[in-house]
Each structure stands twice: as C-alpha cells, then as structure tokens.
Amino acid sequence: MSSSVHGKNTSGVEVTNISAHGVWLLTHDRELFMSYEDFPWFQEQTVKSIVNVEERAPGHYYWPDIDVDLSREIIEHPERFPLHAKIA
Image (spheres, rainbow, N blue to C red):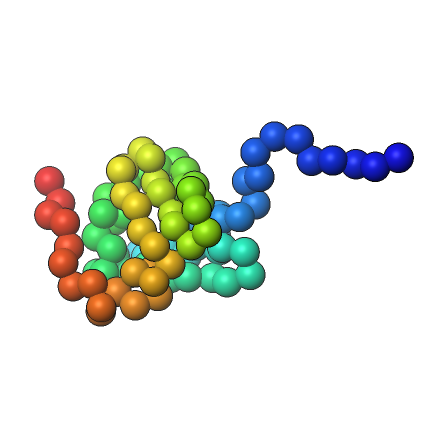
C-alpha cells in the first residue's frame, strides 16, 4: 500500500516570529529575517496578514492580503535593492 499526499503543499514557507524589529520567515531549511527598516510594508499589518504568505515559485514569496511580493535575494540582500515603495 502506498500513501500519497493530497491537496496543496503548505510547508514550503511560514512566518515563525513577528517582533518589534521585524518578521522571521522559515523557508524550507532556512530562516530569513525581514527588518521593518528594510521592509516597512509589514510594520503596521495584522498578524493574520503577515502569516498569510505563499511561495508561488521557488524563492518567490507573496503576501496576498498586503499585495507584497519578494524574492529570496531581496530578503537576503536588501541593500542591493534600495528602492522602497511608499507607505500610504
């Protein structure tokens, strides 16, 4: 007898911590930190909106409730991407 997984794989990415300094994202076997200084879009959001994250393609993350999409490279090296969207 064999087992097969049914439904959508939800274990690829998850938010593991939200603090006064930023958000920690666990993706596969790595934890990534997004400071509010570099990623200000998350600072005033609800926990529900922040934890609702999808990995749409390997290394590409999307938060549908706040319409933010980021790559692993942007999260790991925000200094390479100095342009920030304005917060309304």
